[in-house]
Length: 155
Picture 1 (tube, rainbow, N blue to C red):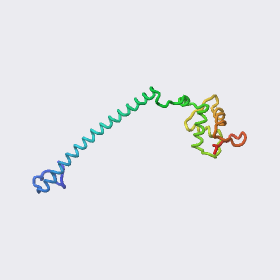
Picture 2: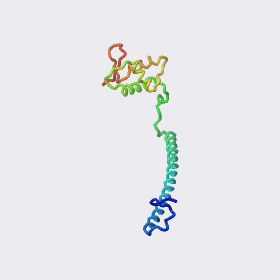
Picture 3: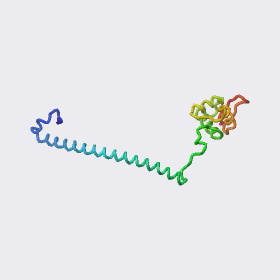
């Protein structure tokens, strides 16, 4: 049995009337807390079930959108993880903008390394040559000097 003010439950019958009222209130509040805790547990379980149902419904809506032609579809070049052509130029420019920024020069080998470090694969028999061929004709990139291998983003 719990203690009240350091007293065990043994001497409770001898408490003054005010203390008996406080004890009665204590018991009511404890019972109410237990009921509320049980209700919180029931509500948590309900919320978890509802979250699971919403997730299932969202997946289903996505399937319906795809079946109806309402969902955006991935471009075919985004399905292939190996970069080539225009997609290679887009990704290379994005990586250069994020890692180096405009106005700063970079050698194409270092740029190639940045793209690879970002987790991308480059297609072709010689990926470095493929990379150079694509980025050298990318809009928004400026070659520095003649045959130096240096490039920078256009301002």
